[in-house]
Image (cartoon, rainbow, N blue to C red; front, top):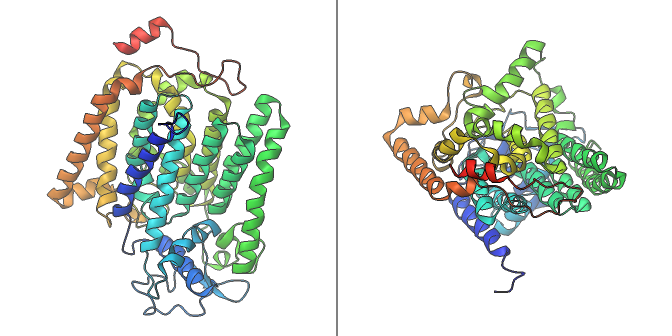
Length: 460
């Protein structure tokens, strides 16, 4: 095999494995009004050439949950539309155009979500491969793809996060190549999916420019991402009659709804809920992040500057999201979704410091990955398991599934056993010292090789 093609083989393997699992487990029936609304808008554009619904009769579309719902309404241009972000609508238009069905269904939207999420997993694998062995990168990207709500949420249907995580994953990969125009391009993809994800791109571009004293980096990132902002403004002008780049969020319709006036108490609850609520908490569904947190802290100074700034960008975005909206993110999905941008943003930092794990972490990382995989697989395979937004402080979807049927115990146990077995087989690779694919004097920084004592400790 040609040496230039050899690195593509594992990336293609990651893609086809993810797509082969994501496709058959993507939603085929209506669960979320968010996903339904975005898909309905995509289908309308693909089949008629315009996004407007002058009537949304309850019996007009199969399983239609939208009449009276906040995502369907009359906007500033006088048309009745689905008020969703540009990217989540635009992304599925090609699939509905290829499908060419007169009867609307969410299938093509689910296929699109599976495809985009598989590409995201490949971008994360390529990002990890910049500093890890291919085996390490494969294990870490596998955990990312199947042991987190990337599988049960982003790959399950066309949420905005399906687009934003693709954009952030692309930013990370482009940063490993120091292709700043491309960083901005993927940043534009992310903001096209959810406008305030532009915070991640902005902090990444400005942060690296400051670290390296190279203002041209920030200018390149801003230039290409601004093109997507302009595209978003053109889209919303056409669809909603406003130049706001926020899509449906800036259409004027949502502001006319009876809203919830946040208080300081509710804001603090939002911040806490995003991280530790039983059914929406980032650390509840991703305890691996807690397990590896000490290693991340120990290895923080060794990280390339772009991983640090990407992590800060993801944290800033998540805090901003907690400030402006309820942490629970509605109903009809499994795991968390509003923390997915944070997950992708911190994934490189966690992967590149995993070799700093202590004895306890190295002994338990395999079972932990298996546990997460089993928990996520339960909801990803059996669609329809979710906790109502009002109950996220008192219930957990995985626990409810286990209590409802013995079959979920079998599914969860099988997934946990497989995850544990794979971790046992490749556990040494997970905890091994990282390799350096970056020159020591590179502006991006390079983790120093582990000392002989550290390597001996890691082999214990």
